[in-house]
Each structure stands twice: as C-alpha cells, then as structure tokens.
Length: 153
Image 1: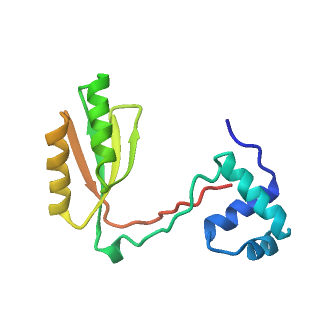
Image 2 (image 1 turned 45 degrees about the vertical axis):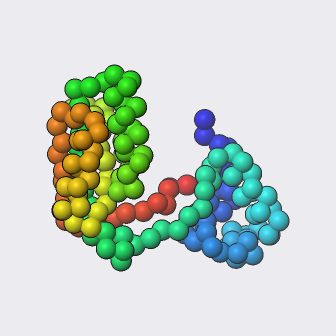
C-alpha cells in the first residue's frame, strides 16, 4: 500500500533524489520549512519504507564497464526448484543490475553491465552452466539515451 505523502514530503523526496548529500538546512531552505520538521519527515519516510536506502551512483564507463546488454530469457522450466536456482544465480552476479519477470513471450529480462562482449560471454557461459535456459537473446545497447534513479514523486 502506498504511503500517504503530502506536498512537503514530495518536495523533500525530490531534493533527496537530486542530491542526498545536501545538509538538512539546505533541504529545509529549498522546500520552505525548517530543519527539525524536515528531519522528522525523513525519519518517518525511512520507517515507512518510502526511503529504503541512500547510496552513491557510479559512472559505469569511468569504471571500464562500457557494454550494457539487455538479456531476454525464455525458459521451459517453471518449477519452484528451477526458479530458486535461477534467482540465486542472478543475485550472485554483480553484472546483473536489474532482473524482471515478465508477462508475455519473454519470461525474464536482465540488464547486464560488463567490460565488453568477451565479459558478457563469460557471464552467459556461467549462467547457462548453473541453470537450464530454453532461449537467450542478448541485445547490446548502442547508446544510453536516458537513465535515472529519480522517481516522479
């Protein structure tokens, strides 16, 4: 169930999404409040799970992770044991940035970030050695047009 948020909560969340390193004083000034109410609201939103964590966003290319693949997976296996093994394999691989179970012809889509095509093949070979997969299609992203972690609040 969605948390009940007012306009001030949403303004605070927008500021935190833009730069979570801002001081409480800066956030309070920008949202038109004072430090203590802003701190209390942030604490409440953390307790409610609206704010799940704070982290740093790294530049993948600056770290040499220049290839982004979207991996479409179809499986003929739908048993609980297969799914457990598959999810475990995905969670153990840091190259997998996102994984989604889909409705439709494709069962799963993965976003995988690696150095190059050879590194992707190593990832692929390791994955198929752990779990049986019916069909895999890898799509190389030629250009990232938009990527954000900012949610529309």
